[in-house]
Image (cartoon, rainbow, N blue to C red):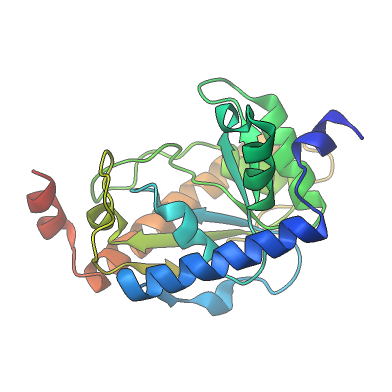
Length: 235
């Protein structure tokens, strides 16, 4: 087994059972406690790989993103959580794979592309770490880069209300509404040579930023926390 295949563990039957069990439990909790509403699920590809690119305002966005589809999603996570092999197995079973935070982790990009080329959907938060406020921050090129390199679409997602439900530093999940809006897939240029990769990734990132802002604005309003209200609560 290669190093990348080792890092992408969690593909067995047991891992899939654990994922769907935990995913369904989380979905029920989010549905009942946070009145989670998902719109635009028809935009999720029913087969083949894609990159799901959500906005990121809360740690709860990760389980919320898994509610976008019944298909098993894969997620990046800080490599420190894999130091314990048993906990690491659980994280891998739940779709996670490790990355080195704060560095140009080329291995993480290779793992992401390997997953996509293997037909697995991948969740990447294009804003990077959790942000705050109603404006979409400048996006990293990683999501667009791996999508262009693997030749798969990017599905933009606006998650409204999650910052009120569990803002950064909070220890309690507040029972407030979350709305997830899924936009139409953004198709990426397919170029096997990779010669136009950087320019293509940049163009896709620009289009993704605009679509994320549109979806996020609408999701925030539907969740009952438009820009003015959110700014007041966070002040």
